[in-house]
Image 1: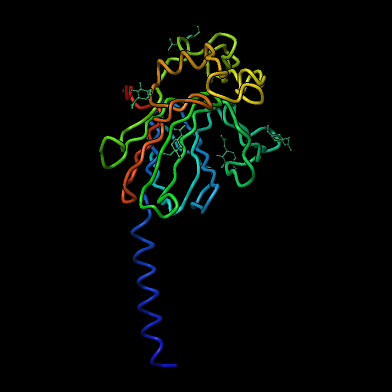
Image 2: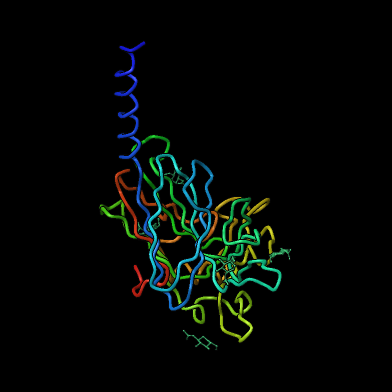
Amino acid sequence: MAERLPLIFVLASHLLITGVLSVSKLTIENKCDHTVWPVIFSWQSQVSTTGFTLEKGEARDIQAPSSWYGLISGRTRCSNDSTGNFSCATGDCESGTIECPGNYGWAQVTYLYFRIDNGGAGVNSHTVSVEYGYNLPVMVVPSQSSPTCMSSGCVVDLNKTCPEDLKKLSNRGKPIACSSACQQSNTPEACCNRDFKSKQNCKPTVYTQNFERACPLAHIYTYDDNNSTFTCPKSTDYVITFCPSSNPN
Ligand SMILES: *[C@@H]1O[C@H](CO)[C@@H](O)[C@H](O)[C@H]1NC(C)=O
Ligand SMILES: *[C@@H]1O[C@H](CO)[C@@H](O)[C@H](O)[C@H]1NC(C)=O
Ligand SMILES: *[C@@H]1O[C@H](CO)[C@@H](O)[C@H](O)[C@H]1NC(C)=O
Ligand SMILES: *[C@@H]1O[C@H](CO)[C@@H](O)[C@H](O)[C@H]1NC(C)=O
Ligand SMILES: *[C@@H]1O[C@H](CO)[C@@H](O)[C@H](O)[C@H]1NC(C)=O
C-alpha cells in the first residue's frame, strides 16, 4: 500500500492542476449609480454564490468551473419588508432572501448566458439576451479577442427603445424595465410558439424591431439570427459590467 501513495498523490495533484486551469474568472462590476443584486443560476455545475449585493462601484470575481452552464442577471430596487422578506422591483427570484437557491422563473430582465468549456470542446460561449425583457444595460468583455470571441452587450435608453405599453415604471413613473412582447402578452404570436413555430411565421414586434436596431449583437427572440452567441477559448476570462458607460455597437 505504501508504494501506491505517491501515485495517488501525483494523480490528485494532476486533477487539481487541470481543474484550476479550466476555471474561467467572471468579474462582475457595477458601474450603475445604484446598487445591483446579481443572480447566478446554474443549469450545469455550480459556482459559489446564487445571489449577492453589489454596491455602486463595487466588483466581484466569480470562479466558473469547467462545464459550468448558467446565467447571470441583475436585480434592482431591492428591499426588505417589515417581516424581513427580501424582494426586488426587477428580476426578483422570489426566494425572500438575497440568495436565489431554488428554481428561477423568467423575469423581465437582461440575461447573460455562459457555457464554460462547452461539452469539453475547449471553448466557452457567451450570449446577451433580451428575449424576456430588459432591465439593466450590460456589457461582456472577454479577455481575448477574435472574430468569434467578441464583446457583446445591450445598452439602451428605455424611454426611446421600450414601447410605451411594455414599460415597467417605478412608483415615481421612471422606466425601470421593459417587458418583451412575449413575456407581456404570452400569446403564441408574440412568443413564436405552436402554429408560429418557424422563422417565417414569427413576425417581428415593435419590441423585437427596436431592440434589434439598438442591440444587434444581443439575442432578441426565439428565431433570432444565430450570431448573438460568441465563442472564446476556454482559457478566457470575462468582465461583465452593469451600466457600462459606452455602447458596444
Ligand atoms: C435585507 O436584510 C438582509 C439580512 O438582514 C441584509 O443583509 C440586507 O442588507 C438587507 N437588504 C436591504 C436592501 O436592505
Ligand atoms: C416574500 O416576497 C415574495 C416575493 O415578493 C412573496 O412571493 C412571498 O409571499 C413573501 N413572503 C412572505 C412571508 O411575505
Ligand atoms: C425618461 O423619461 C422619464 C419620464 O418621462 C424621465 O424622468 C427620465 O429622465 C427620462 N430618462 C432619460 C434617460 O431620458
Ligand atoms: C446556431 O448555432 C448553434 C451553435 O453554433 C448551432 O448548433 C445551431 O444549429 C445554429 N442554429 C441555426 C438556426 O443556425
Ligand atoms: C448577423 O447575422 C445577420 C444576418 O445573417 C448579418 O446581417 C449580420 O451582419 C451578422 N452580424 C454579425 C456581427 O456577424
